Length: 554
Ligand code: GLN
Image 1 (cartoon, protein in one colour):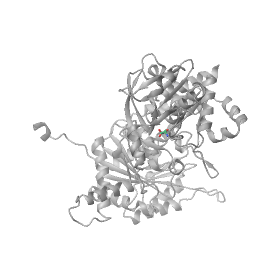
Image 2 (cartoon, rainbow, N blue to C red):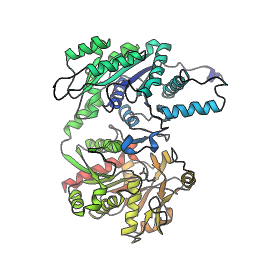
Image 3 (cartoon, protein in one colour):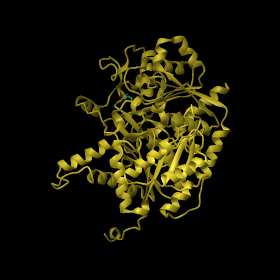
Image 4 (cartoon, rainbow, N blue to C red):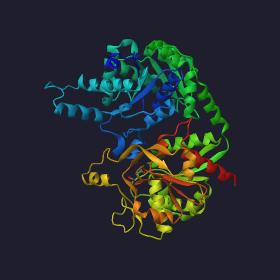
């Protein structure tokens, strides 16, 4: 008891809110993550929180074209891709507490109200909603024992659904004026007919903050070219911010150059001075090395990513596979190669076989990421068969493993009707089937947050390629799926050269498979892309890209 009473000296908590101006999708997440990395490089403990103002409780049930990637935290929350950016830049695991949506906030408040948690008082939009938001931000800071908590508010400041978050920011600042900073990440357009960079939209964004009772401390200017001095002065005067606090954040070749671009403008030092944080020596060596390594990697390695969520109208989106893309990059740079990603739409393969062969021939490796539903799966299995027969390196992730087993069942075991019950519940060969605990959830239409989510241990079999890559017996990786390989067919698969190289500790679930007599054919039920970091590529990606790079030499 005595020890508990002797409270450890807690750190002073400070918070930086990052808001958006003019438009979203300009790299607020990467900016937030980069600021975090720079502060961490000064020995500070940093954590980050993402707020998505929409009413979905989490993005797990949203269409990938609508939302982009669903990033799964270690403790099993389906979150936004920015959490992935934070984990990669901060090199820290984050959790449920680092993410919130308006839906999740209201759900908590309403549940609390129903349980008499407000003791019969009227529950008000203000202050009860901001108080819940503030409570979560503070909890995230406590859990990480952070000196600095960076809170990114999704979308832009003028939006109706952002108001309560800005109010939370205002209330926190009022409570502790020297410990809360506000950054505005804004976009500066150069209209084609003018050829001149315009600051007015950013001025209006700063006004929107002012209208919410807030004053930005930093304005980070996203633009194609760096903002020049006269425009910095203009923003400084009109937005009431020192000229040195108007920061240029032009487009860069690699997002991992962003911390370096911000560093030369003293962003972290300005923040440290404003928040009166203890100044530590900067250790930016690993970022400089990474940037140099990226520039040195010129010889390409060509990876085909076969998926279906690529087009919206006339635009092609790769956002749905952001972590996969980053993981390929991490691994490629690690082996000194330039990652060249070819986005292949599996639906197209099914229609045009000649084009399919042409596409396959140019590749050094094939990757099939996670997915759901029937659209495009026959094309994916064509690619798997090609990789298997042409000894082309293959990495399958989640659906990419399930479909590999279906393909092998159909073409090697000759069970032509083999399938996953996700597609054909009546198949006589359900090689992939619903997990027991999932069955009931599906019957009850309980879709949100009800998959097998988050990290689970996996035991790697001795003597396998997988074990060689991980160099460990037990690894933990993150999952997001409802179906699994049916253990009934394990021996049949083994007779065709499939090795179940990773199993759950109780041996029930197949977590990784690999093929004998193939230079690299590995597929996992989990998503290794969620644990790859620029300084520590995930072993499966590293092995895959290495094999693909060797393929080129042959
Ligand atoms: N649709 C498959 C399942 O639910 C795979 C999911 C995924 O690839 N993330 O099991």
